[in-house]
Length: 238
Image (spheres, rainbow, N blue to C red):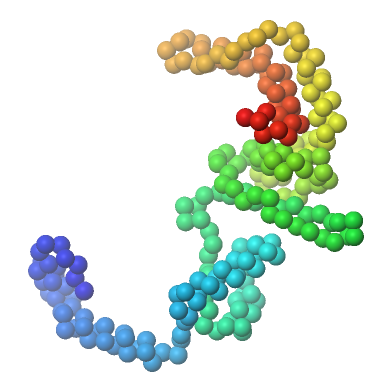
């Protein structure tokens, strides 16, 4: 088949002269392909049926908190093919743009020792992906769900950027947050009201002055962060 580009004769000449592909040969090839498809034993569902079954697979993966890679597991594929040999299991679920994501799930037991689990978040994690950024993201997530004082342990994968030290992943309970806030308040009592200094490429030493001011403001910034973490009001957060 030739796409219209205003002057298709040059393309037609190239195909027939260089590759020996003429219109008759192409039409015969298409007829053979259609014939092979009609006699082939390999069948597949209608796209609407395929999509409906894929949604069921997605519901299974999410509902049972399975890794996305399970769709590529040979045993899983064998089970699906045993149930429905015409269904094509998705072979990849990765982001086409290769975007990094961070997922967090919570697990707990009731008073009757019934296990429960829920997906808290599956969000894009902008660069950088160091332990500090992951820790900050988790703290924000715990505060959003108001569970920062209810968590007893954190489990991460074995990625080097997630092997956080105990001091980094230690979760401050409510009393400890309040105690830290009181200590920081005492630290900033003697500080006067100061603004941050903006770095300016046209001013000599402006970057130095900016960091010097940040060092002075560090206790106040830390106190603000601790106060926001201990406050559950969305209005205060804004």
